[in-house]
Image 1 (cartoon, rainbow, N blue to C red):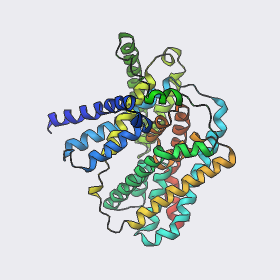
Image 2 (cartoon, rainbow, N blue to C red):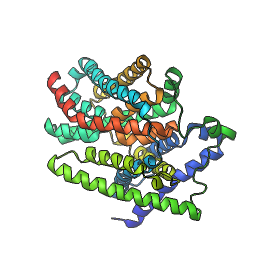
Image 3 (cartoon, helix red, strand yellow):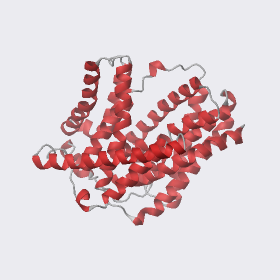
Image 4 (cartoon, rainbow, N blue to C red):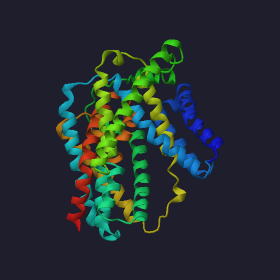
Length: 387
């Protein structure tokens, strides 16, 4: 391995978000787009113009960072979070209607697209697992249904491409449209007037490198590493008894421990935890987008599969929003539920950050855990029903 190249790539991925944050504060139109979307665009451009080096070093850095950032971000963002019992109703409704929306979209789309897709029932089953849980569920169901490994890799690539498009739509205009059509509750960490004042984004990291700030940062990071280590140990132990469940139990354990620790007053009062978590999300956004190299895709015979994916995601989002309108669920909770199912829990902090609303972090993660838990069962069930 070329360790020098490895180090350079690592430094670039960690430093570029700081430059984008600086531009968001200094350039008015970039500030209005926001750092998350800018990093997504930048990562996608880097992935497709040939400037990133080919080889295992790039893949190693990308996989390491994408796998590490979310487990670190979740507890940091939860430590300073205040939970509200009054919002249980909206979370429960969003969870149920979102799950139903995905299943209805898949069943409705299959007669249109399924007959043109090789191994259609298996493909529908894997995408059911993926869109209700995540990639780990899709992989598990592919093993259950004995799907060829090459076909699984191709289907997963298509899902990444379409899901990337969905995320860009949500961050660019989806959140704004939902807030115009559905009720909007008081948003935590979101003051539009302050954010857009003079065309600059407020700098939450200004005091981080002071002696006091570094003390808070080190305490936050130390507690987070303990939480992650305990969660990993718990998940490894259970996954030995129930193979293929590591990610489900890992995210569940991190979320649970993060919640429990947040009630400990000395931790809850620490500063910069949320902002540190946000920076990890910025790195994650850049890394994930830089993995979307469309030049590596084989589009032969992919029209019906990609069409099926777009159909499922558009219909499920539409049904989610219609249900939210009927049950008077607030806009951000409805959108985060859709994102959780379609893109899986690791993307919840990123969208919560794009919303500038930490209130939806916990509902999104909770809904995601349910998706992880039922995704495998639903995937096999849908495959059986459509066979």
